[in-house]
Length: 476
Ligand code: GLN
Image (cartoon, rainbow, N blue to C red; front, side, top):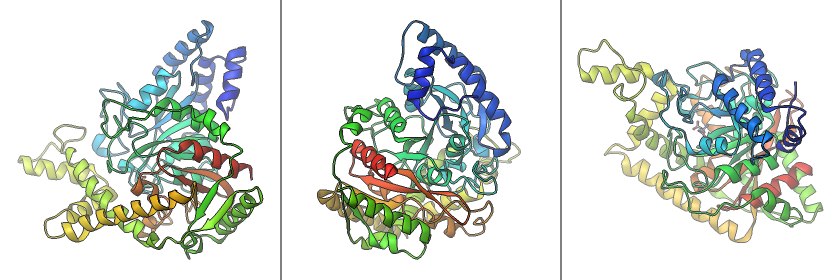
């Protein structure tokens, strides 16, 4: 079995004929079947993947090589792919078949990538451990007693188990970066508006962004150049001209960066001491290589989680109102009238966490509480935005832990949702402000041997800088 960990090697082998794309796809399908216990894939797209592979093989025979030819990609179960089921890991969408393909997935296909299947996630992307899926928890391939993280747990695990070469996830508050950190891979959340959200099932629209999970930074940069850029179907997608990120990151490889870190984040009680030490060592190594690393006080840290959970639940309560048993998926059939049909459909169709968030979101938007919660949180969001933009006037990047701890055991945090919300302390900032962030593997815990990552954040649309610095850190 070939286990490709980078696109470059795959392209060499495809070009010199040591493997065909069809063989490659067959091998991956076989491996996915062997690893079913991990509960990573909800469905393997065997037929369409083999058809795509055939097309890639024909293209190669005619010397038509595309940027992502043969790249085996898994997609999170909240990305629409025409003719394929898409459920957001919810009972309410069981059996729903997409009538169109999301822009990001279409661009991957057009660039020669193979969509191998859809991966498990937390229901409607709400969660940090993949324990909120209607289809069961994803086990961490590095140790199946542990969670893979969430909400894109299946995406990260599909890489850690070598069941594909890259994965698409979505990141509303850390759902790409946190599982990447828990599974020891690279997770990128680009700038808000960098990738079209057309065909991504909405959770909180002003936070949602599609992201990538890969084994390395080079592949992330190559995939981003393919899927980023304006889209007439998403008005929030920015009118940028997409650079060749891979080329730009190489050009920036000898740049000396001005880096900030928040002492409040590093000194926080909840941070695992080994992660703290590892970060401090990284700062020292960066300084030795001629970069500057300086503390910048960030007193607003404690407002991140409340702001995120007020605003995202408000948006979710509105976005999820469309699942009413009339237009999509599941419907309760034995109701005596319309109202009962709505109520029963939603009560049975949604899981506990999703219902909790819909209720919370409806509450913060209700007449009596709107100003106290929703308006207030919007103001804090603006304050956070202004503060971070000010920092980027003087610094190229901010470094932070990705998560306060390494992966925890399955079931360990299910009794208390607040404990799980606190997992997001370091990741939500990038979504609140709309800036890009990447998590790259930094070390392993000596206690449980599970990996943890470090996060690099830059100003909006500075993904090339982000990649360049992340690469420097992983080499340090
Ligand atoms: N863990 C966060 C939450 O539960 C992030 C989710 C996400 O990014 N989709 O909301």
